[in-house]
Image (cartoon, rainbow, N blue to C red; front, side, top):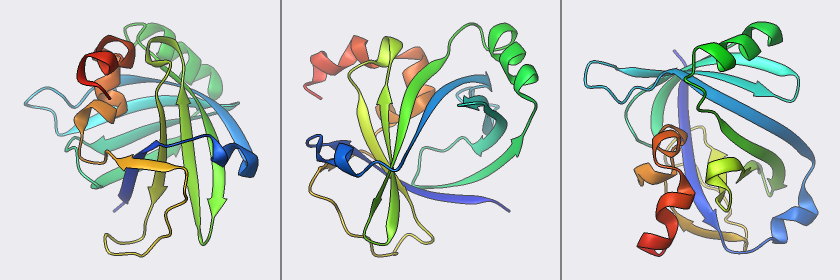
Length: 165
C-alpha cells in the first residue's frame, strides 16, 4: 500500500532559489475531487514537464494519506485534462531544493492561485527528524485551504487578502 507522509509550509523569503537543482512545470486536474461525502479518494491527472500520471489519494486532509501513482501516456493525460476535468486546472512550477538530508519541493502557483508559494517535504514517518531551512514560514499541513483540491474551487486570489494569509 502506498502511504504519503507530507508536511506543508508557507515561505518566509526567497532564499531557497539559490539552491534549486531541478524545475518542473505542472498542470493538474481532477477526475474525482474526493470532496463529496460518498467519495473516499481524489483522482488526479498530472502533467509534469513531458511526463504524465494518474494519482489516487485518500480524501482526508491529513499529513498521512494513502497515495497511488501510475504513469500514463502524455496524449491521454492532455485529452483528459481538456475533456474530463471541467476545464479547471491547477498550474504551478515545482522547484526541487535539497536541504540537509531531505529534498524539499517548492511550489509557485500560477493562474487563479498566483501569489501562493509553499514548500513540502515527504517523510518516512511522522516522527522523522528534519531540519527546517530559514526560508520556511508557518506550517499549513492541517489547513484545508492549502490543498490543491481546495484551491480548485476556492482559488487563492479569492481569499488570501480576506484572512490575512
